Structures are given as C-alpha cells and as structure tokens.
Length: 496
Image (cartoon, rainbow, N blue to C red; front, top):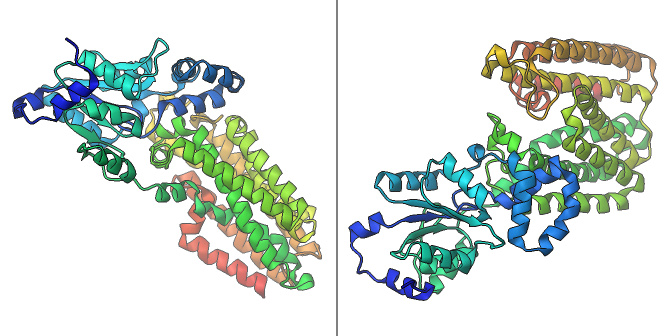
C-alpha cells in the first residue's frame, strides 16, 4: 500500500532505521539552486531572448497555459544553448553525490525543470536509473514532487533542496539536507519541527552584486571630465559638481549595461578560462536579481540625468542604446564591434560637454575616436593571443565565441591597431599645436605631452603583440606602474 506524504514523514522522523539502512537509502537531489547555482528556466529564457527574440511575443501565451508548458517551450527554443557540461555546479553537492555513489547509494535527480534537461544533467554526471522532472503538463515542485517521490520510493529517501518549495519534500524525507539555503528558510524549516543539515554556508548577495557592477570600469568614465578640464579657465570650477554627479550617473548606466551584457553572455562566459568566474556565470548572482539591479540602475540614472540637463539625459540614452545593441548583436561582427567601442568612448566626452552646454571640438572627438579604436583592437589582440595559446593550430580558423575574429585574423588586427594609433597621434599633434581650445598653454608642452602619449601607446601595442598583456588595455593601464607614472606626467603637463 502506498503511503501518504504525512505517513511517510512520520515514519522517516523515527530513529528506528539502522545506520546501515540510512546509508543505503536513495539520495534525491534537486537541481535548480541546489545542485546548480542557477535556475534552468531563467537560463533558457535568456537564450531565447538572445538567439530567438521573437519568442518574447509568445511568452504571455505560454505562461497562460501553465508553468510546465512554459518550461517545455523554453526548453525547445532555448535549451539547445544551455550545456549541462558548463553549468555552475556546487562542488559541495557534487562531492556529496560522489560519496553516496561510492557507498552504493542510488542517487536520483528530481527537479521542477523540464524532464529532458534533468536527463541531460544526469547523463553529464553519469547517474543511472530513473530521474524526475516536469512533463506532461505537471510542474514537478513542492507537494507534487513529494507525492511522486513517495510513490516511487516507498522505502524512504533522503533529500537535498534549497527553497521554500522543497519544504513539502523535506517533510517526506528521512534526512534533510540544504544547499544554498538562506537563513530565513532554515529558521522556517526548524519552526515546522524539522532538522536541516547544511551542505553549504549561507550565501551573501552583496559581494556578487558589487562584483557584477565592474566598478573598476568606471575609470573609463573619467573622460566625462575632458570638456570641463579644457574649459575651466573660462568657466571656473562651477561645473565641477554637476560633472561629478554626471560621472556617477554615467557609471550607473555603464554598470547596468555590463550586467545585461553578462546576462546575455552567461553561456559563453562559462566556457571562458577567466570570465567563468564572473558573478552571473558562476551562479553567485541570481538572474532575476541581476536583471532587477540592471534595470533599476539604468532607470534611476536617466531620471536624475534629466534634472541635470535634458541633453545629458539624451546622450546617456544614446550611450545605453548603443551599448545594448553591441551586447545583443553588434559585437559579433568584426570591425563593427571595435567601431562601437570607440564610439562609446567618444560619447563619454560628449556627455561631459552636454552637462555644461559646451560642444566638444571635432578635432578632440577625432583624436578620441581613433585613440580608443586602437585600444579596442589591442583588446582583440589580447583575446586572440589567449585563444592561440590554448588551442592547436588546426583550430586557429575558428572564430572566438560571440566574436567575428579568428586567430588567423591576428596580423590584420595588429596592422589596423597600429595604423589607427598613428592616426590618433597625428590628429593629437595637429589639434594641440594649432587649436586655440587645448589643454596646454604652450606648444612645447603639447609636443612633450604628445611624445609621452606616443611612448605609452606604442608600449601598449608592444606588450599586446608579444602576448605580455592579459587584460583589457584600460584595466591593464590602471594596474601597470609605468602607465600610472606616464599618466601622472601628462596630468602635470596639463596643470602647468
């Protein structure tokens, strides 16, 4: 006779079973948030938005037909882009599963995700036997999951879960384990008279959230002070506060777009040697929280920018639109991608002028565009160097994930980068020596600044071509002592 959930719970809570029986009892493991730090539903949704955006229009109809139907459709349209081999598995849970299999215990996966995804994960982990997932219009969570397990495993089971939906399953289980369980949920479980053995410590969200904002990238937004620095002899320090606030608002927009970019690149980042440690790719930051964070930052920044200067609001709206276009599609096309990056740097300068109602010189914008176009190409060389060092020559013709370049394009990228570097220096010398609106009070100071800039730019390319640069050129420059010294010299020349 099949036991009910309550009867099974009562039996499991007794201490009558021997230690040997407990060690041989099947171990049932939830997937979303437990075995894996992420949630497959959101993973598929992201891939649908990225690869098949037209499916967004169908979402409302899928939702109306129930959550199980929604999961099935999302799997069909986005599941192919989510590989079970690269999911952010919790090492503590994997180790616990390995110990159970070595002890001869059956290990069963039971998840609210689509049953086909559950089978993919089981195959990746080489777990034999029957596994359970949502199918046939049944969303296998909470009491539905508990009832299914009680019927399939009448002699009892132990269970590893992570959310409030798992309370009903914990109630039916013999030994209850938690992975990724919040302190509030643990107290709630205890209040219901159950004990919970933690496999992982409580997770902290603040640090991954801050990490996802990439605050070190705000250094690029210092370009917003360019127009102020050029015009302060005429306008004084009055616009400094407004420009400073604009710097923060532009940083908020940039951080929001970085988070959205990481959401769209989550699968590609997991296959990357270093990017897999990002907060979203590693599962430290949940997708819904990341999306709310990104949209909140962008919305608040635009509202505040409007009150500073409507034109400034329009410029950062254009910056945001170009950044998102780059994240969604433009970064996949060779040459187009680096032109977008150079344009984004130029927009930072334009934003600073919009705050104080001063139009930047075409000479200045030309220099900025070609200068940062060169650095963008240097960034691609760094990425191509990394691939060249990690794959055999037979694979050098394959394009980088999400990019339009292959290792075989490296010489072309280097040539383009050096050419645009030379062009930017040419524009700098003409602009600084002939224009009346420069940072320098003397042509000799301008010439000296140009020499320092040329040395720094050529050194950056020297390091990139040799493979001695392993980061984004801007980020590398912030950490490189010689770049910091040269930057200080340029600043001194400006002050003089």
